[in-house]
Image (cartoon, rainbow, N blue to C red; front, top):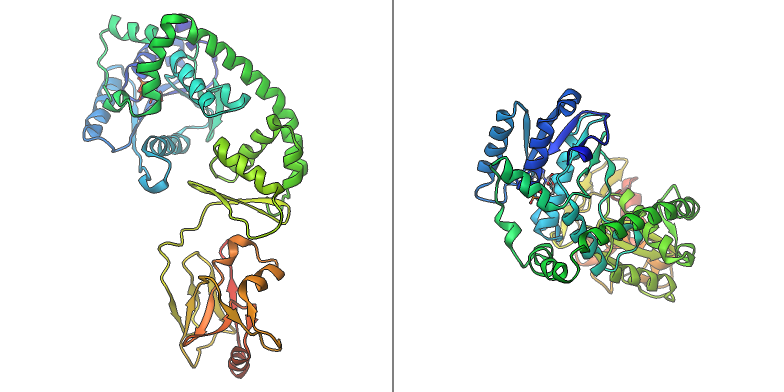
Length: 424
Ligand SMILES: Nc1ncnc2c1ncn2[C@@H]1O[C@H](COP(=O)(O)OP(=O)(O)OP(=O)(O)O)[C@@H](O)[C@H]1O
């Protein structure tokens, strides 16, 4: 373990310290290495506040560090339980957000992930149909915030760390969620891995070796998909050429998509969702549903891929009353009169629910909103957010784009017109 911890001599160190046995062994070993202390060593603990004991755990971490003469910074995370990604993933997301915010410049955040964690990660990825990047498992190093994540123990078996804890009689936290067999990782750890290792005693070594090869393959492929990314992406609106993307080999297509989404702060799709996107790229015209998963939606529109965070419509009010004042709409768009003026009537602002029609001034026909939107090439994800202006039960204007004869007369008389600024 000492040798692994000596590998990267630059930068001060901050141990990601959960208080569990692995990060306890890591922290203790580093605290007893003169070289590590000379570089600067501290610990950071994230209190997720999810467990009745979590404040006591944080206190334990502080006390353990104090006994070693180290500072332990404790940060309380706010875990978004409504994100729809599961509690474990939401806690992980909150934890890494905190790490990124609080890591110092050029500091190395050292994790206690070991060979058995890596094996589990790779097997879980395999079971989800991952490609070379995913099958490569955790990377030993990657940038985070203004520092670097460092996992020096990926080739160290768990048992070495547990033996270290026992030999030094170190006090550790036992997190009961690690015993919950309902969680896939725990089932793998406690049920499948022991079985696998009775037949293949070197399974962890072989699997982590394969993972290393996959990481190298993924690095080689990265050169190609990055070049493709530059040529397929429209820098201005961040969309991707759908046909060009689909024509790529899957080994380039998948990481390119994941990178494109990640760069926009969005989450990656499962294999099934990615296949849906591929099908959508070749689908003929028509009303195509978007592909959605927690935190992200992808549209195929005008031969391009577009991605965004979903807008929650469920909590929108049925209507808003409007008399011309600047009105912030539930999706963040704004409706106002230009120049600013008060309307002589109160209009109600609603959103489409399907089947609406309007007869635009100067048009001989009544039009369906659906066909108006299609002809005017309004992006599908903006359509639900277009404010519809009603006088009583009569639809007199669609945002600032289509006005009925009644609306034209009303606004002409005022010398002002509505202006709609879509949400960004
Ligand atoms: N709440 C936390 N605060 C700081 N670091 C954490 C926290 N949870 C996990 N980590 C870091 O991530 C690594 C892996 O996390 P994982 O959830 O697999 O481990 P754990 O069961 O919490 O504890 P350990 O790995 O320390 O025995 C830990 O070794 C530790 O470095």
